[in-house]
Length: 507
Image (cartoon, rainbow, N blue to C red; front, side, top):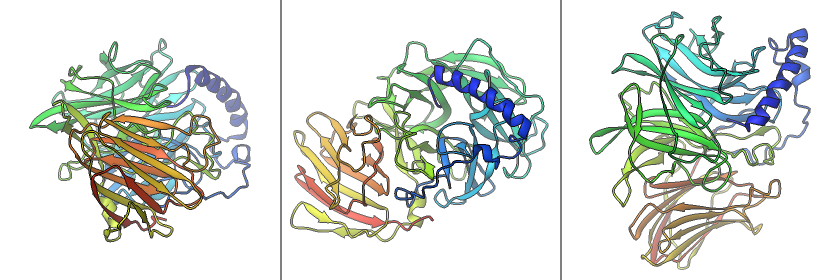
């Protein structure tokens, strides 16, 4: 989630002091209290993205509580409703009918005297197992005060208002400091709710018949995967691969990502309702090798008629999240992506992701670009856009794709068939001096063994999302250029074709 153990303990102490002040002024019941208002008077919207989700104002980090109900995708997220910095964490809330256009709603679950409202999940309790009412939307979250405990809140009006359960907390462990981010789902085979919970450097699984009483089932993670930082924001779900059901366990880690800071690893294996058993694979495996796709979780309750497993991540990195050069708001979400399992050239399964088809709803017609040389001017105006490049790159070649503008800012993508690497370079991408960790070259394994490379890139006002060969490998990176990139130079491919489409703004 969120911080180092030391910082979270300090934050808890600060929260306790502030809590005493706030109880006197009833600020926990009135989040418009002047004590918490951001005194920032800037109106810097220069980097507000055209097609990505961002809060209307102030701070955002992890997506959480993602759930679909009656035609609406609910996007809850970690939110400070008073300042553009981390703190006083609550659940922000927005809904969408198409995963693209978002309606902002009031704060769903507000921090209270028990502590901040950290990450968690939501379920639809169709059979009223918890007793809150049939089809209640139940949020399971971490209440972070002096300790981190798991708590419930429920809604009987499709997520518009929540009532905190008077019997909170429902799960505690005084021996674990980092004890958070419950992801819950109904496991039909064992007829119980399953909770995946981050427990310092492992994921612990719990079971419950009623969402209120939880039993420890098993623990996973010792001696496997990356352990360079605290484990958090787990997600456990099934996918089909070659006709067989496999279970995917997402685990975010901070720090310890392959290119620095925060990132998300995953494991593939089997789950029997009690134990997750990982397949023998070359771990760690990473969801995204860019700097800015963290704490991603998937939507619960997607209809079987749809069948997709859809994820959205936090598009930032704890190395610099509080210093990115936006002021009225900070940070946002990646574009939603569909997760599938595909086969690595060496034969084992890997987790692939592709942009959701709903982007077609805001996309203009594709235009094929032609040029006698290697440089193309992009007539994109003031719109986000997608480029799709079909390139023939022989085994020993290194192909380079450079996005640029007339301010001499550039974002460079390199596909090195010889080294088997997919690299991005944002060191000259625009404004980078707000953090020494921001100007970076990020390196990923190419994960393909063919000269036919399809590179799909979506460029927005403050981000570049690049996917190779239908999601075999991806990189998500923030950028802060003075103006949108409007030129592309392609070199090193023996041949290429290029097409472009622009997107209408969601605002």
